[in-house]
Image 1 (tube, rainbow, N blue to C red):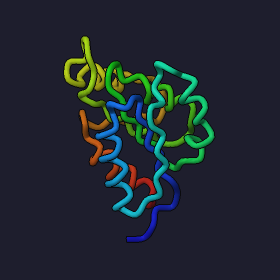
Image 2: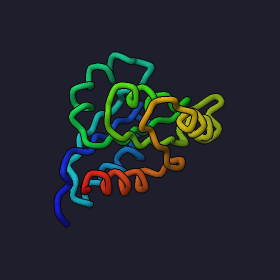
Image 3: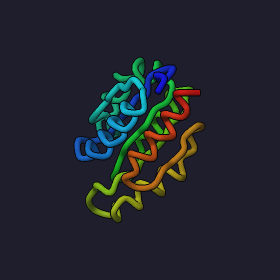
Length: 135
């Protein structure tokens, strides 16, 4: 397989989102893409994602993995001018409802260029990111 044209950045909100983020990272790597991992950059410490802005802006496509309220894809989508693929995770406590709260938050994002895959679907996110990166 020919290599992808750019880099796919994979951002996860918290460390509990790592299994889904790594599923996306390994899948995208196996599909011939360069990967940048930006882990534990959630909105609870907004400075962490803001510090990564240069790496986010240099990516050709970004996968954002988040549970809880699913706010990180909207933040990232407002910072960059590339496609953002949002992946809600089933991780969370309180009223997260097994990822439904994050899914609904991501579907309701008003940031331009954010699309959403199903709960815990790191594989699906990597497949579409790879297709974008190979075009």
